[in-house]
Image (cartoon, rainbow over all chains, first blue to last red):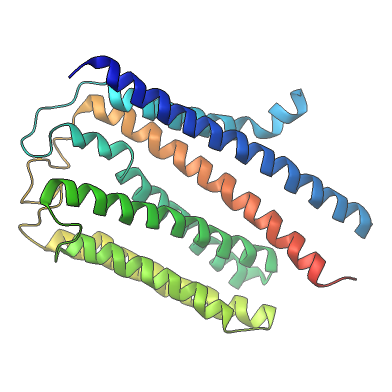
Amino acid sequence: MEESKLFVVITVLSTVLIGLAVYLFWLDRRVTKMEKEINNNKN
Amino acid sequence: MNEFFKNNWWKLLGVALILYSIIAGFLIHIPELPIIRESIRNLFFHVVMWFSMMVMFGTSLARSLRYLSTFDIKHDVYAIQSVNVGLFFGIMGITTGMEWANFTWGTPWTNDPQLNGAAITILAYFAYVVLRRSIDEENKRARIAAVYNVFAFVMLIVFIGILPRLAQGSLHPGKGGSPMTVTNLDFTMRLVFYPAIAGWIIVGYWLTGIRVKMANIRQHLDNPE
């Protein structure tokens, strides 16, 4: 069993995680903007 | 950019800790145990889900108690969203556990106190969600749900913390019938295990915060002032 196969697994999983994190940050920003807009409209 | 970092640094920390657990989790040396062998690395990906779930449910309990003492509806919103995120972790835990079990024992489920206890706990919290949906009035719902939340958490303690310890001969790692025990958890593995839990808990809080914001927005859209 080569070690290089392990590195492929690590790379794949890291990519998935980073992709998820980027998506989460984007979602967070979007939702926070909407919230700010609503609070501004309220006041 | 700096303002963004000042408010959100902890989210990056959570992601970094999980990333560390993925990389280190596969690279560190592990003890050579029969049967379980390399899959012991699942400690960093399966077991962490359970700890994160318990922390989210504990957070929900705290919020429910705060609601009962202040009647500030904000706490109730956090209570339900914490449960939602906790349920996500719990479902991940059950699913990955079944995958691991099928691979190791040849069957995805056994009649085991730890497994059954985890399943019952998750059902108890699904019942919390269902209970909430049955009540329309906001404050009544919050109060009843908060009281139920206390019972649900007690069930969690009993079915996950107490009963599995009383059982003997369970195949589940950490109990009598498996080569791996809790006390002999390798120090190197602890160096990955604890940061992983911390990372997932941080991400759990982050997810809860986003869900709370979404719920508040939905609330505002449904009730134009």
